[in-house]
Image (cartoon, rainbow, N blue to C red; front, side):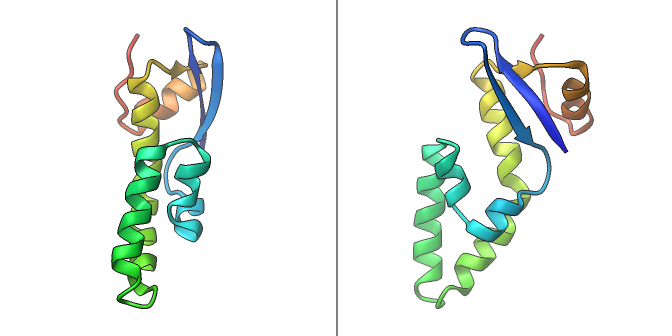
Length: 104
């Protein structure tokens, strides 16, 4: 399920995935890096290195599984705190159904 978010100050439109992040599941910290979410990309890299190296990659896989459930919510909350708003009524309803706090 996807939602459209727009920033009224810059008129930038972002389409975000709501729910489980398959890209994070398969690629770990890379989706955060490609989205420009530097903080979570660095946190993910550090966690994957410190857990993954001693466990021959098993710990990094566990991180990816856990983080796949929460990363899209973290990213959407970050965008909403930066002033993004639902671009249309369908997106607003999707976000409200998933318990996101929207500003009017």
